[in-house]
Image (cartoon, rainbow, N blue to C red; front, side, top):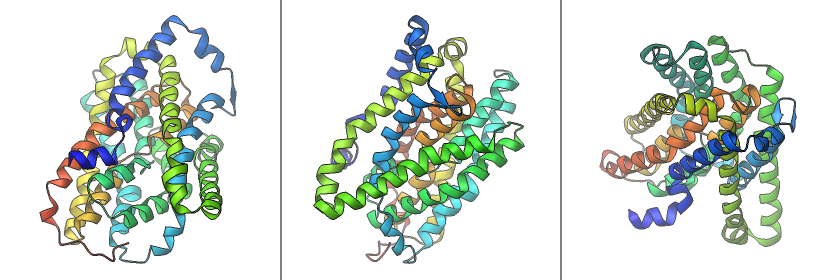
Length: 354
């Protein structure tokens, strides 16, 4: 297991929670003692979208999209039960359980600790996380659980396409139910900027480089060049965001934990829904494990970007999405351990599974 972890997850990914905490501290200090820096950067925006954040988000998402082989979609018809599990979990269950759990905690259990206005914004951030499933980190989780690579690629590719049509109406509906007003144009623009543009760029880059230099060069030499760029993009985004969040964090430090509680419970719930559904359908473990991981994982880069576009860099909604980044890795590594201890629950793997 330790050897697999070393091969499957980078030092940066393994200690992502620590990096987020460091960025939180650095951002808060910049916001408190060097406020001219975030004030200057905040001037650059178009249609409520922060240009610096947009650039940094592209640095994160573009390399992710290059990793996805959309030609794998032709295999979608091969043994599709595993795909059905994660499609249903991601799009018909996950956004709504996130909404329900967030309402329960922010407006119920924690109502004496969180004001109604803050609760509403934290709920909006949670909804954005719940409606944005599946990142390139899923490839890491699948590898660590010895998941079927072909199934994982097909699932990630189809989810990225479903986001194009599913994300906007789900977010609009759930935020509307929460009495949170969001403009259609900004929501659609966010999806275009943070999904369509990097997705198109990633697909075209993959096709061009593969045709000219071959798949082996693309996978083993070209893609690794972007690993550090992705990490830098995420860290700078977090520092930038936390430089605006200093007052909220300093005045409400307990709220980081209060936000984390429902997000962690949601992650566990969705994993077990997909995992036990796979067990009920008698899917092999190398499909069931990544199915659970794909359901549990959030596309937090998209959630952060949309939260900033809709509510601003200083918003509690943006803070809630960043807490999602904070808890993602330790919770997912715990789920990896659970999956790796329970392969005996499932039938033997099938070589033809897509």
